[in-house]
Image 1 (cartoon, rainbow, N blue to C red):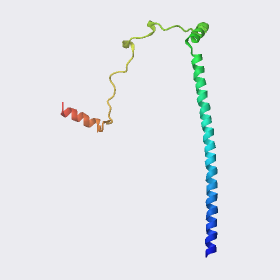
Image 2 (spheres, rainbow, N blue to C red):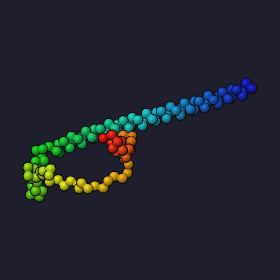
Image 3 (cartoon, rainbow, N blue to C red):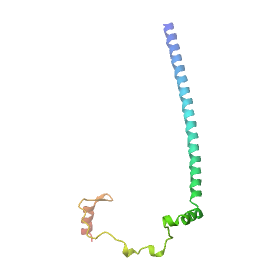
Image 4 (cartoon, helix red, strand yellow):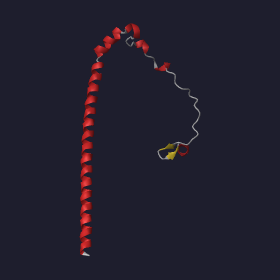
Length: 123
């Protein structure tokens, strides 16, 4: 019986050693993956910062003005004038004769029909 206990104990120790070995290498692999992801994120942040700086450089007002002047003949760009803006009465709003809403709509926990009935009862 004592020999059987020694064999079982030895197998349990070897199993636990294998498990610890396996967990150790999984942890190291996860740490390497995390380090590579952090490096990739850092590179993407650097790339984004460079692209923002490049965008700001390309959108300088003096550069855009110069480009507009150089390409005036092809593009026909003109500065905004007051006559290009309309008045509010010139805006085409939808007609007032809209069909009524037949589906009840929930308003703060109550149905619209119930709210209308309540308003009719309490003017």
